[in-house]
Length: 92
Length: 310
Ligand SMILES: [Zn+2]
Ligand SMILES: [Zn+2]
Image (cartoon, rainbow over all chains, first blue to last red; front, top):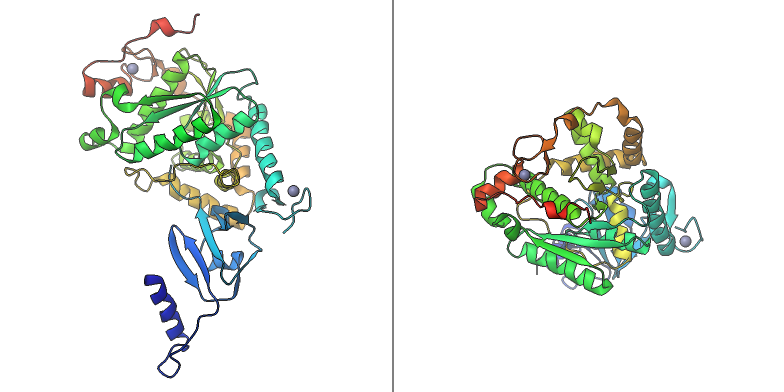
């Protein structure tokens, strides 16, 4: 699973997954879908504003949804959330 | 964030208007904005028969939804471009949308209008396909609106579309286009239907939010023949300016409309009737008739029986 690999890589980078610490249990994770592609953030909490900035998305061209509900950029995503970022830049 | 109108939880922040709104207040904001556009720029009045060009995308379906809610007697018009798969899915989205609302829908097939679908045309022509497709769609839409005696043809162009077109016209100093780019193009010539863009003051993001909140199921797929149109980079440039200075897009467009008179409209003087179909062109034979001759060997018959006399 490519997503799992991504998480494992991140954990390795942070030194959380090593030979001496083989049983890391992932306690927190936020899943986001941008342009139809799923990505995972191993964080407990993140503001939509911060998320958009991290992915270089202009808030004027995007909307964030959680469970089908529109969110303003001051909302926090929490662990277990699935957030879909819809972008307006598609051609007609 | 709280709704500026009622204090409930906001679902969207509109930086250009310095407000955040809840679902209900945002939906009314959108309806009011469209009604204001229709009145301010005199697009049409309540009793006029309006046909909405529906591609199946979010803008055109949203436009139809809004005009219907505002009480205008609207009908839909869809052109099936004959692009395998893509066009079928677009038409299905349109048919489902209209069936749900029990609203009148008219469908024309490009294959029947010109004797070939976009796929066949794409394999034979060298000119940019999007401009050719746009030309044929505009022609067929205008002819349909005029033949069926609709008083206006409405399209789903939003503020981002209009802003990008304006920027493009300015970058190339297309004076003739600048003189005519507007939310309404009146029917000042015979066989020319009035064109209206009721979403011209709504940003693409606002249209998308409306579409999501109303759960409109639109056709969200890029045309397989669309290749990085310049309108896309113009939109991105304007949205970057909008990010640094909220309200830039709407000011850019509305201030242009205020001062548009400075651009002389010389191109309109060259317009004449096509020798084959009778519709307006700036040449002897219109480009549509040329395409038609290429694919069917016969021009469009002049339909005098449908001139709107009775
Ligand atoms: Zn409210
Ligand atoms: Zn012609």
